[in-house]
Image (tube, rainbow, N blue to C red; front, side, top):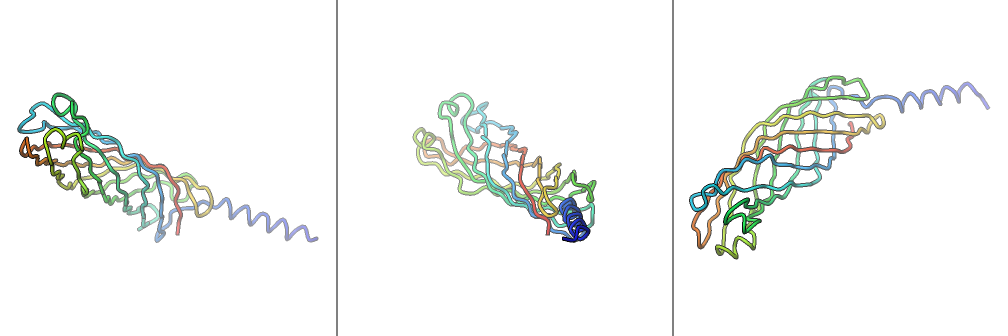
Amino acid sequence: MHIKPVLLGTAALAAALATPAQAKQGDLLIRLRGIVVAPNEKSGSVLPAFPGEKVSVDNGVAPEIDFTYMATDHVGFELIAATTKHSASGRTGTTGSIGKLASTWVLPPTLTAQYHFLPDAKIRPYVGAGVNYTLFYNESASSGLEGAVGATKVHMSDSFGWAAQAGVDIDLTDKLFLNLDVKYIDIDTTARLSTTAAGVQKVRINLDPLVVGVGVGVRF
């Protein structure tokens, strides 16, 4: 057995395994995350019938995929794709006694420009800022609301806003890395409830969620 070639081979393997994933110019980073979308909602009144009565919006959990193209070693552009379901509930008064009022699916494609501070390191923090367009779809009234006021149609207006993020990639192998990411997304909508008994009611909601994600990524 030749000891020297074995030692050289072992050293080469160790060096390969120790090589950081490194975000380099021209690389494509694909991440799969589990995310929690936690609205920081500020609600207006349900008008005109219920002045002073506001709504709350619950959290949503979903898988998310994102693609980051590294335009330079330090600058990347990320596009995320995910959809979550949320419910709006009354807080006080008549709407509060009903509880859940409506639900909707939310699709918020978001594009951010990122700055990666340490592209050659094994732990690579980044920050980003960009734009978001949020679509609301499959809106529906709750059975409690329809039981109280009759058949109800729900429509929520789409939203255009800004987004900010911070995150970190941590090497697991030369291609695979762990990712932690937090985003703040500016999302505003007006919910329109067209009811049989109470006519048309509107409520303005600033959702402005924090999106917290944990997942893994691969460099190509």
